[in-house]
Amino acid sequence: MIYPPFMRPCGNTYSNGTAGMQNFSTNGTEQMQGMVPAGTMSAGALPALPTGMGTGYTPGPVPAPTNQQVQGMGQSVPIPPTVQSTMYTPGFLATQIGKLMRVEFLIGTNGPLIDRVGILISVGASYILLRPTGSDDVLLCDIYSIKFVTILL
Image (tube, rainbow, N blue to C red; front, side, top):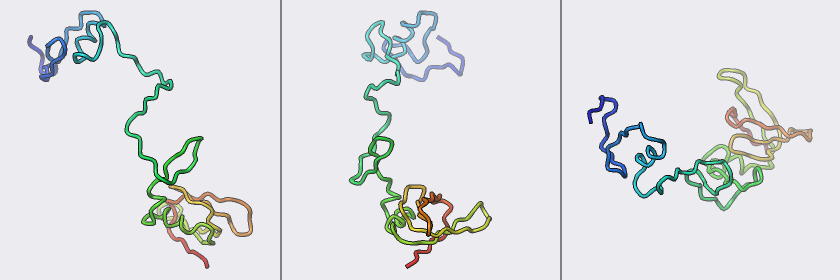
């Protein structure tokens, strides 16, 4: 058969021995059987489509859990390496939990530096939690806008 340039077969063959293109004048079952490699489907059966129901299917590789894990949304979530390693800002700040510190933030690209003083309560992958001095409040701070941290002794 002669194909236009954009429809030429790529050399792949299917269960019926034909090249990559099929004649689509037959019904859907025959089309499907001609397009699926041999041995993957029984005659007349179409593959099951995903339903979104709990089938036990996990898309992609699942990361191996670490020894340290956190509880989040009812499931155990591995702690990212940026929070564990002191080579990263969150990892270093995690070693300073419970200490009084002044954290300076850059607002915008060339905006003002503002600071907050408080006790470091917790460190996440992209945030820190401070308890401001003289208050029982908890302040969530964006870790990406932190420019300077002074640990007060």
